[in-house]
Length: 234
Image 1 (cartoon, helix red, strand yellow):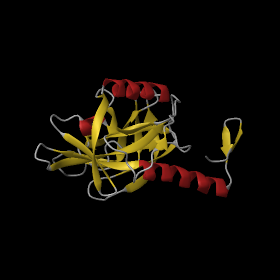
Image 2 (cartoon, one colour; image 1 turned 180 degrees about the vertical axis):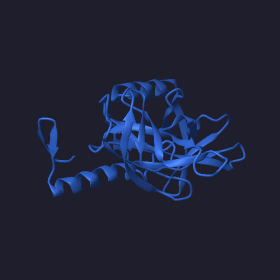
Image 3 (cartoon, rainbow, N blue to C red; image 1 turned 135 degrees about the vertical axis):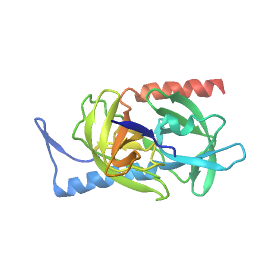
């Protein structure tokens, strides 16, 4: 039985038919580029109560579309009642406005109240392939108390709206954006598998099987429209 545990908390290449061949130097450059995109755009999203006590945190990534800047994360990270949402960048907390919340697919779009000078956004591009099973992916975030960490993994299975990733995550990783091997966005880390393992009478987290919400339906044009509409109502 499965439980979904919602976590509280480019390259030069040459294609021959359906095959892609890379030199050693190109392979290294590709991995470095994609890891850098995940790491450099990663942010810790802190959740506070009305007395400004931190009650949890998640992760997210900073993007740009033209002149627009925004953060993508998981909806469950920021959808609690009366929570104050802030992002930590360079030791400074900046308030985040929730401009789009898709609770069914667990995806949210946030805009910082002030420019994040200590974190540069990365260009938002999506992988729109229907089936990406077997694809190598990477994500960075703030799992538990580990601080900024980066992990790679493999897409074990996928559907149009979600996928299972064989990687690593812990509470606090929620909202980490997952990138493919060309630096395109494939999804947002949403949950971990839980089950009965060993002799424990209680369900346990399986930290290497990670559920990810697909983002192929969130195009640059769609997100730009959402942001422009939100700004026009301010």
